[in-house]
Amino acid sequence: MPTERTRSEYRLALVVEPAAASFGALTVRLIERGDRVAAAQLLLSAYRGTIDDEGEDDEAALDAIDHYFTHIIWPSSFVVLDGMQLVAMSLVVIVDEHHYIDPVATASSHKGRGIGRAAVTESLRSLASTGVVDVGATITDGNTASERLFAGLGFARVGEWV
Ligand SMILES: CC(C)(COP(=O)(O)OP(=O)(O)OC[C@H]1O[C@@H](n2cnc3c(N)ncnc32)[C@H](O)[C@@H]1OP(=O)(O)O)[C@@H](O)C(=O)NCCC(=O)NCCS
Image (spheres, rainbow, N blue to C red):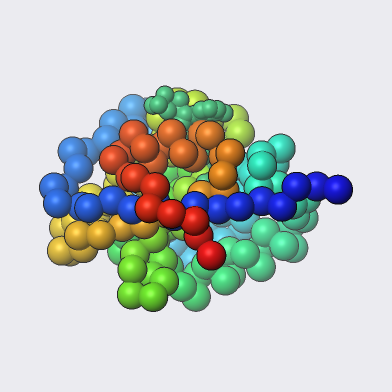
């Protein structure tokens, strides 16, 4: 029997606008509706083999993106491109009047290079510039990469996500 996954909530007091992150040769821009298919492929690539992998297929990933596209805060949701390839994204949603990063995802080919953290930094800068002072994230317990990404940005665990 698989063990039941648990999630925790993390929050950041966004008192200072974070310094701009470096994207090197990559480019960062706001997500657009035309990114739908590439964003779905990115989700599949990012989550495959992780603790949150539920074996989703193309259709499930497209459904997930369509759902995000009805919820995200477009002016604070970014994608990162390597040439034409969409390699990371940081989306922002509002739950119970609080802003959350959901999700951050980096393509398997581009993990571990600081791109996920840089993408979230871009979202945080955008939120800070509009006066948002409180940002959350929910992370599956044991998702070490995500836990470290958010800890490095100053997020602190506030409790179990129910
Ligand atoms: C979580 C995720 C976005 C991280 O993206 P990334 O671009 O590889 O992250 P970064 O390179 O910016 O690294 C951020 C931190 O995570 C650490 N990290 C990255 N991959 C790791 C891994 N596999 N194991 C442990 N730590 C890892 C990095 O070392 C870094 O921490 P440090 O600065 O303390 O050393 C990526 O692994 C992913 O897409 N996972 C699947 C989707 C997901 O789980 N999203 C989070 C939902 S809340």
